[in-house]
Length: 287
Ligand SMILES: Nc1ncnc2c1ncn2[C@@H]1O[C@H](COP(=O)(O)OP(=O)(O)O)[C@@H](O)[C@H]1O
Ligand SMILES: [Mg+2]
Image 1 (cartoon, rainbow, N blue to C red):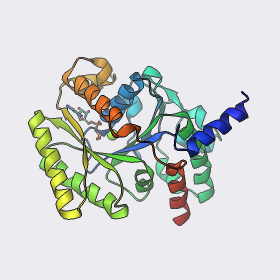
Image 2: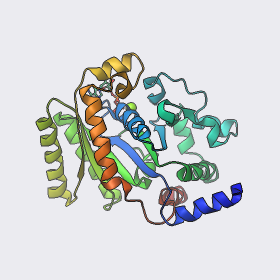
Image 3: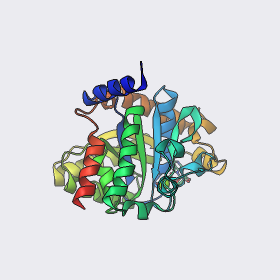
Image 4: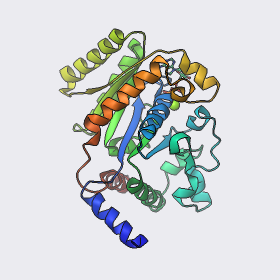
């Protein structure tokens, strides 16, 4: 089949809601809860299970996923404009064929560029939607005006909290903020750094209860990950924890979480074509 015919077939599949990547934003209210470590290891675990996964570092000014896997990104999205590269030129390859795009330090300027320039980027991103099974955005803490669009355009939002009361309050504030913009948004809660399964489940329940009580919103639970010393050891050696020690408590818990996620809601593909890009274009226009 010619390239053109293959692309056309891909398009048609995409319009039927098949073959288009599920886009996931990983967010939190407070920083340092484990978003980057989770995003990276979640992406790797999905990739290990034969999914084609792209991890996109969108933490403005603080991107560090490449450091966590001991890579030095050669190009960033910022280079895409400055050197007029294609999006494929800036994709790095990580473990288990995981693809990775580094945000780069000029992200903030990039988000504030003209509609035309943003469209150039979004068209490139549109191509990727056909290529991957999952595209995961590692976002910064909180939501700025620049990044909220990416969060709202994503098919799913993973909100991470730890059991600490401050983290719970901030996660609640973040979910409330997202809910204010879009009441139909699908949000999943992950409790990270739990001292026990029970503590994790209590935290989940508390947040689910306040969301239901004050906002009449149901939040599903993605699961609980334990506090595990292996994480900081892995960070020190610049190896993702799931590879540093696949038998560690946290690595096993993550395997289980990913398996549950995949068999559960994961395969419910979105209807309609490339909702993600269409939504983003709409946001850029409305600015
Ligand atoms: N499950 C965990 N168990 C123990 N320490 C953790 C865990 N998750 C994260 N950490 C610690 O928290 C630090 C910050 O994690 P990071 O993923 O960079 O957070 P964020 O991206 O939310 O700012 C890590 O360097 C690690 O030491
Ligand atoms: Mg981070």
